Image (tube, rainbow, N blue to C red; front, side, top):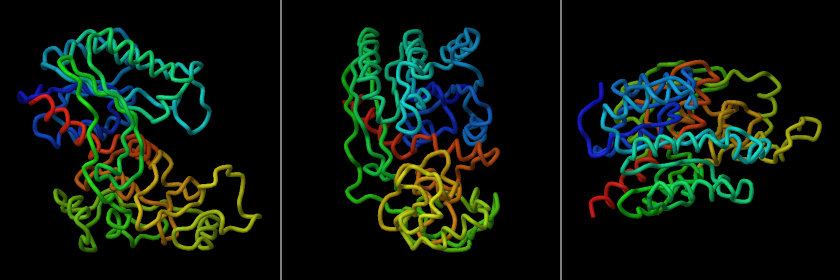
Length: 360
């Protein structure tokens, strides 16, 4: 099950639903052969969409799991590692625990695999705030360790909308190479893809409508919509949340592309963030898709004019997953898979840059 020989054989750590691997597979010189995640409810989507990959479920800190992953990686000829250690401890959402959050030290476990396997290239992906958490301590620790392991490194923040993703998501990326310094990719598009271009052909469901699998009922209008549909004959995961009457009443009071500023004070509730109850803007990229995009009160995740939050398929498109990539599991599992994923088109841009630079 190790797959055909490719230029880059990848071990994907903290693989989740597979956005990083799926994007890199869009460059034919990259192929994930081994993947690891602690949560089978999240990795099930990876398994079903990339069945040729050896997916191991277990804790990266477990000696037995480490041995299994390393042995299989050696057997499969892994020469590249990718992954994003869980980012909750670095994130701008919730408490910023920094040094007090044990999750922030999982990058050490990641780098132990680098030390054992000595890949030609490895990628670390994480939230933008990794660079500033604990006054930059984590960034410096990671850079110091990478250099001690004998790798050149370039690090910075990439904005997904610069690479054809209809979303302004920003991610910290470390590109590390044994032989030479590979710089981060430059933007691949001049004009960002908008929400309208991404999901305009799906704007017909009301709250509670839709199903796991359905035929297309409209035609693709934009180039992006055609790209999303290219390898799929049906539409999956396009099911709207069944909002309660109060939520729908609030949404009915919010005009297209507006937010909570349109609600009377007595209906504001306890939400502290200004962006709650916000609607997406048709002719701009989406803000960051998170793991609660299906809740009307959460952030700016409501449809530009329909009285509902976006569906999993709409969120997946805003993440640049094409329609052939199907998400499996409970409602909570699916929204977590999508919200935590690396946008595939961003991953592809990184793969393309690595391949081009390594060939020079």
